[in-house]
Length: 141
Length: 186
Image 1 (cartoon, rainbow over the protein chains, first blue to last red):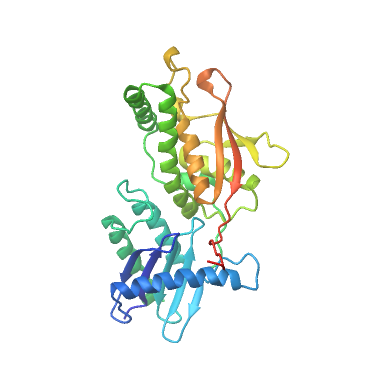
Image 2 (cartoon, rainbow over the protein chains, first blue to last red):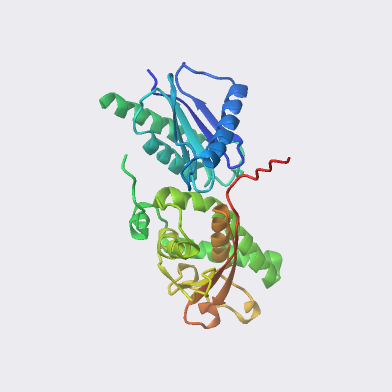
């Protein structure tokens, strides 16, 4: 059972810098994940322009029949989004937490080049822990 | 989840991992010293410190935003207050104050009474042109650039040059709009 299907991080210019699959459903190859990322980047931007509410910062939640997509955009323009089972709760908190992990284990790594794909083992380890914790919390609820 | 309000600089400072202040001060001193040896020219050292600060700032801003929970500032005045009250407290453990606003609210001074970088420093005669803490101005410039504010930052007062405080003048040059460069005709 997997509440979270996948996690994406997109840099401010729309490039996919991190992608991870959890569980079997909705597994995608590299090309598909790149396509989803750039599609989402554009849709997010368009939604800001189309929104009837002024000062809108883009879509935060997309609900479909088979999945929910929760998106968090930092003020610097990096987007974090998870695709999860419909109705999964507390995703905003998880995304904020992932943002913190990103600032700690990616941005503070002196060998990480800004805006480039993330290949940081410490980030992977801590991310896995965070996702697992979230799953345990979900089972307990 | 209910929206979380911004956390105070003190609260964040209490929660982050810290190193011994002396180690920090001495490490910074060693860096400046090495730069002086390598680059020889004081002007070049100022430039290099600013560039190093900038490189730190463009990464540090995200940590600041992630851990402080501050939301979008309504104007530059709020931005300056946030830097002085939360930013400096969170990363340096000192509080700064904001003064000397110009009429149109685009230029102000951030005044530091206390600065851990200079605890043991006396500027020798050979380095009179050195802005010892120039890394700080670079950090602020880099951080603000990542949230679409182009700024120019200069030192007005420097305790190492005999002034009574550190004063950093922050001038907002322009705000780059975040909108994507949509051009319908292209």
